Image (cartoon, rainbow, N blue to C red):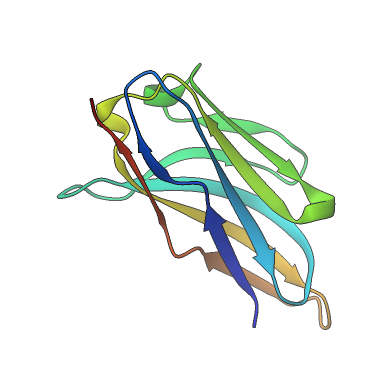
Length: 121
């Protein structure tokens, strides 16, 4: 079974940092473009950051200068480093990625199960 597995969420105080990881598991050949989204209670899911297969990045205005998305192709993993966290960053964070499977090179768009980030004093 091909899936995205997220980790790294937790409870932190304002100003602290967290790093989220998203790893593709199963028969995976490669990850193409990937992104992190978040959904706060009562709000719609929104894009936080994106990274292309070539490493180009794009960020929501609300996280520019604080969050950094990166990838390790050898580990088929995408990261989100979150610095200077604020209470308004509190949300469930989801990883999304296009992957090529290992056996048939089929293209799949996958979502992770979500990981909670809670920022509070």
